[in-house]
Amino acid sequence: RSAAELPEARASADRALRVLRSGSGAGRRVAALADVHVEALLLELQDLVAVRGDRPTGPVARLIEYDEQHHAHLVETLRAWLDAFGDVIAASAAVHVHPNTFRYRLRRLAEVGGFDMTDPEARFAAMLQLRVVAPPAP
Image 1 (cartoon, one colour):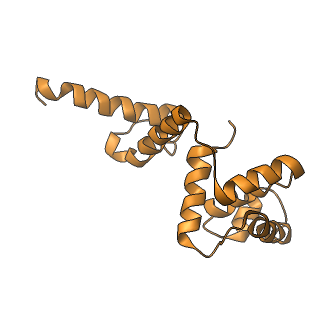
Image 2 (image 1 turned 45 degrees about the vertical axis):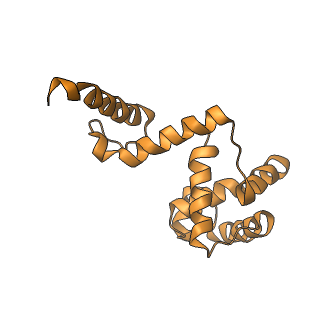
C-alpha cells in the first residue's frame, strides 16, 4: 500500500479490532475487516442508536414492556427462536425450558407483541432491534 492509503488501512484495522474486542467476531482472534464487516456495521449502528437515544418499537417494544411487568421471558424466547432459525428444540434447549413451554411462550409473544412470526420482514426487524437497539445484557 502507498502512504496515501495508510489512514484507510488503519481505520479498517481499527474497525476489525473493535469487532474482535467486542466478542462479535465469532471466536476469531485475527480478522481482516472483510471477514467481520457485517459485525462492524452492527457495532456502528449500535453507536448511532446510542447517540440518538433510539428505543425499540413495535412488537419488540411491547414484549420488553410486558417482560418488565410480568417476568415472562418473552424477549429471551424471541431471541432464542430467531437465533435457532425457528428450531423449537434447539431454542428451548438454549433457554433451558421444555419444548412445550417454549411453544407456549411463542404463542404468548405472538399475542402480546402482535408479532407475525411467518413474515420474514417482521423477523428481520425483530432480530435487528434485538441486536442493535436492545442487545442482551452482558
